[in-house]
Amino acid sequence: MNTVKRYLRLYRVLVTQFLKTIMQSRVDFLIGLLGFFFTQVMGIAFLYLVFQQIPSLQGWTLDQLIFIYGFAQIPRGIDHLFTDNIWLVAYRLVINGDFDRYMLRPMNIFFQVIAEKLQPDALGELLIGTILVVRSLTKGIVIVDGLHIALFFVSIFAGALIYTSIKLFFASLAFWLKVSGPFLQIAYDMANFAKYPTEIYSKGIRFLITWVIPFAFVAYLPASFFMKADTSAGVVGIECGIAFVFWWIAYAVFHRGTQVYESAGN
Amino acid sequence: MRKRLRIYLPFAANELKRQLAYKGAFYLFILVNLFGSFISYYLWMAIYGSSEKAVIGGLTQKEMVVYVFMVYVTASIVTASISTMVSDDVVKGTVAMNLIKPIDYRLSLIAMASGNMAYRFLVPSVFIWIGLEIYKIKVLGLAPVTVMGIFLYLTSCIMSFLIYVLFDFCFGMLAFFTTYIFGMRMAKDALLSFLTGQLIPISFFPAAMQRVFDFLPFSSMVYTPVMIYLGKYTGETLAFMMLRQAAWVVLLYVAGSLIWRQVTKRLIVLGG
Image (cartoon, rainbow over all chains, first blue to last red; front, side, top):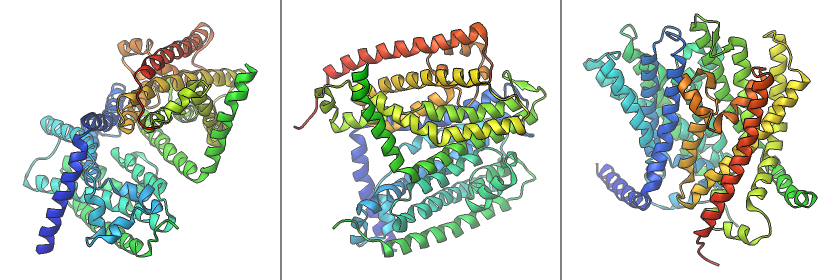
């Protein structure tokens, strides 16, 4: 219990320091937020223009696709907000030897990595995700009852954990490869496939994004559970299972990596 | 002219060499970009599958396949970003050095971008282009592109490249006002992918918006060369489209010079 308290206090201290640096440059903060916001707005505009030409896409209406799209942004945004520093492990910290500083302090290493930074850009994604989900609620295309509301939050956190695990796994490869940024980038961008119903893809791609890099379980599959009454709640169950297994693997690889880590320098 | 070439050609050559040195990362990024094209491809297949009309936005399903991948080829040739270099120079203050040297800063950037473009044309664009052309003839059963078509397309591409680079130079000037160019670039890339026709052909937009786009440089960056390649423009329209591209090159060149003159007046660099 004391450890938890200590870490919570440390997190508060570290994040406060970081927030101070953000307050120095409020314009930058707004620009970053708008950048990510815009990217997603364009995706919606694309769907909107396409649906001027067709009534539905393989049985999905525009409103339903917008819900899938918006729902996909929320776990992505949560992970982006809290664990953005993982990108630096992949691109810079290991090869520069800057990772040393985490090794020296008497704290959990993973905790230090993520506590060092909050990424306010992520609010752009969270904002658009929330707007689109609320819009879907007012349109009445989402099932609202106790079970679905509870599982909505479970699914979002499991989804964010899947994101974090995939990022951590590929970033940890940097301990062996020195730089693993491009691999991480590829894995991360796979998530773009899952913003749309996976039935539109060929079998190979569908298998890849469902079971290998399981972004379909972060976005499309749970989203359809919230819209279609005949979908089993098991989807969210599998999502949680995947989240735990992936987290366990990613953390093990990360832990092993910190043991083989060699600093740069002379 | 020859003197200029002698001065600025090394910038292009250096950039080409630099790109060749980091091949590994480069190939991975090609893969990432191709992902985007494949997502578009599958989406469009589903869209045409759900449509009652055979022609949407003026394109048939087969033409749309060509469109999606030619957009990839065109965009990877055209979008040689220089705003990152500008912002790096401004943030670090090295831009001051470029003011002292007896060279034109913008021309040196354009030369570097050309090196970049040459590299991207060789790998991977040309191979994807050839692959697409084979697929187009063998599988889709469309007529192969003519020599004239290739010539017009490449000419249009070069103008697109100049429009993009000159525009990006103006955009890079924003680094004088904010240091967070990463966020600006996210917003720019998002807007451009939409307005240049990368995400969706311009012909899908409502007529009123298309009218507005006629007065903006963006559709000349990617949409125009791809439509030329598809053979959608002929005769007078073709001539008009290419003239419009040329006009944008001149206009953005002048605009860039004006902004540069204004901005360097207020430049303060710390340190010696």
